[in-house]
Each structure stands twice: as C-alpha cells, then as structure tokens.
Length: 137
Image (cartoon, rainbow, N blue to C red; front, side, top):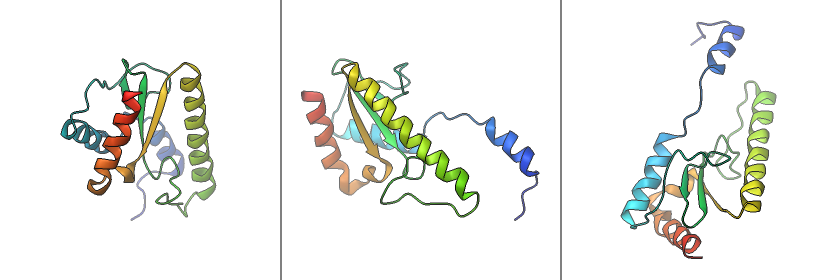
C-alpha cells in the first residue's frame, strides 16, 4: 500500500515521535522481577542513558535492548528499503550503548543489558539468576 504522505512529510511526521521505551519488553521484565521476588527497582529514573530499570541501593542499571533497534547479532534484521539510513541509525544506537556503559561504569554503576529475545519463558530462570548475582555483589 503506498504511503499517503510525501517522503518529506513522512520524515517530518516520524521525527515528532518520541521514544518512551518499549512497553511490551519492560512489562515482561517486570513480570520476571515479580515472579522471582526481585525488588528495589524503579523506572523512569533520571540517570544518564535513561536505563529502563534502576536499583539505586545496589547501583545496578538494567537496559532492555530491542533486537532490531540495537542490532542483535542473532535476531537483528536489516531493512532493504533505505538501507544506508538504517545501517547508520543502528550503528549509532550501538555506539551510544557503549558510551552509556562506559559512563555509568566510570561512575560506579553496574550495567546489565538484556536482549529482547532473552525475556522468553525458557530464559527466565537464567535471567533472574543473573540479575540476582548482580544485585548481590
């Protein structure tokens, strides 16, 4: 189906959309926290890099990375249309992830990055154990 907007108008419309996190993945991680009695987390913290979850007492941040947006080596896809744009966009996202990691690490925070595909039922226990280890040290 053809777009109802011109390329310029579509670009303008899309540029006005602001990210507020991926609700589906964040809600799934909350389910895991609750199922495994992992407490002490907060969302929407003002910490640099906008972590999805912050455990201030343990100085641990958790980021949930979408496979597409963060270039998952297993599940990341490469769009055929506007390929150069998406290649640069995803490369910049990955570079920003590294910058945020280095900054938070330098400030004494531990950073946990969870891939979107790591939130499945089969990986749940392993993920909960990993989070508990990070929170215990």
